[in-house]
Structure formats: C-alpha cells, structure tokens
Image (cartoon, rainbow, N blue to C red; front, side, top):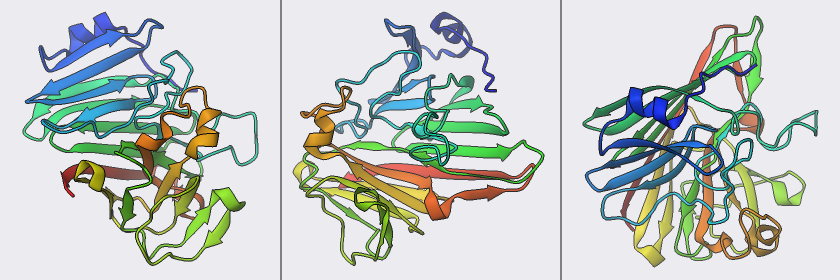
Length: 297
C-alpha cells in the first residue's frame, strides 16, 4: 500500500509557499503542481509521480522536454519531463497486467519540505510503496539536482530496478551526439534484447533507439551543435544509462507524443536496470543521484 497525505493547492500554499519563488496551482483535472522561479531560473513539479516537467536556467532554452500533447490527469503518466521509474523498468517481469515502469510514476507523493539555499530551491517528497520507503529531493537552481533514496522496509532481502527517465529538449535528435558511453556494452530493446558490444564512438541516432547501457561511467553528455550547448548528466550510484527515442512511426502511435514531437527530444536516463538492478538487505538503503548542468557546446 502507498500512503501519502493528499493536500490540495490551497493547503500546500498555506504550508510551503515562498512568495514569488514557490507557488502551487491545480490543473483543470485536479492535479497539483509547484512552480519555482528564482533569479531568472524556472522549474515545475507535479506531485503526481513527483514528476519534474520543466527546468530552464536563467537566460537559457528549456532543458527538459515535456510533450505538447501530454495528458495531465489523475492516474495518467505524463509524457516527458522526468518520470520516476520504480520498482521495475519496462514491463513487469512476470505480470503483464501491471503498469509499465512500475507503480510510483502515477502515485500521489507527499511533499514534506520546501527550502531555499545558495544552491537553489529544494523540494523533498516521500512515498511508501509496499516493502519500501522512498525519499526524493529535487533542487532547482543553476543546476538541476535529483536524489532518490530507497529503503527496504520488508523483512527479507529485495531487488529492484529504478530510473529517472529524463527527457531532454534538443534542437534536432538526428544532429546531437551522446558522449560518455563509448566503452559500454548495451542491451538493444529494438532487436529482442540483444546484448551488443561497445560502439567505441559517441552515439548518434538515425532510427528508433531503445538501449540500456550497462556499467556506465558517472558522467555523460548530450552535445547539441544546433543550439550551441552541451547538457552534462553527472550521476552517483547509477550503473545503467538508458537512451530512447521512438522515431516518427512509433511516436505517431502515441497519442500523448505524436509524430511532430519526436525530433525535439532525447531520453538519456539515470538508472539501475537489467543486469544492474539493485539488491538490498532488510533495512538497507540505496541513494541514486543526478546532477544536470548546461554549458556552451
């Protein structure tokens, strides 16, 4: 069972609002979101799924991609942003009736704390799916910092998969290159989960791509010459990097993405999946972190 103290926008405003910096609102379908603004930086977070849907540093283009066709409704996964994937990645390993990518990305998380500091504006959330206690800290600032902590509250050892399923905004997915994965083998989900050897070169996309890179280093970058920038993704306790773009045919079949949106996005995800799944003893904890920065490419 997942337990969270559900609060509406008015209650959250009363408890956590920082005037002009952190504000709360509700969508027409009743989803609650926090909007963050400070020194020209803006960000957005939905409590459903603890889902970051925007981050834009001062003077920069948006870094996070959220589909113009995304559905913001209770129980519906939001297309784009940074979904939290847990405790399995992709389809459930044994039960096809279970939701894709686990149970937490459409769950209502509890907001526990909002603070300002030199590094930015932090929001801390929690959720207790069966057998686990999750804590998630997001810092909106000149960098976007994400920290997901998992505690095993069951009586026995457990294993799980996890990912911060980051969608990044790019000028043209066919013109960007992902560096940092050159020496890593990968599982190619477009060819029946085939294990492929390292490519030995930065990754460029020219077709549907759905790869789980294994035993990856702590830093990778999206080089985007069209926008003259480089998005750097630095991680800790993340052994997998997932790279995904559906390409136009599959995108057209997704009502919340559409054939007109695939070119402006690429997913380069922080995670622990497949051979890199996490094993925890009773009471054990695991913290996975991501730090996203932007510099001139």
